[in-house]
Length: 128
Image (cartoon, rainbow, N blue to C red; front, side, top):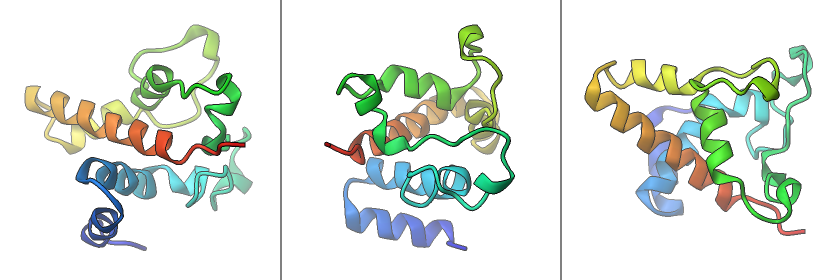
């Protein structure tokens, strides 16, 4: 697959470092289910028990406004939404926290990583 350094280099060529981090985290952590281009067609979709959403259509499904706060909370996953039903995707807030060192400084890094993912997803919304 891709090395983290190669993904960061590609991301830096494509835009800001924040956007690059969001794309890197997306490709490393989300694309297996959501697909390389976020269309909901990742290689694991055939074995999942639930349909995988097309993340490029989040704005369209929310009346033309990207639901940034909701997307952040879903990615973080540490706050459970009772009305959301079962959670099928990983709790990335916990995963990132462990990856970042599982301490107070890690929590700030988690917030930055999740926000960069949100920013990346906002940047790929379809405008149809």
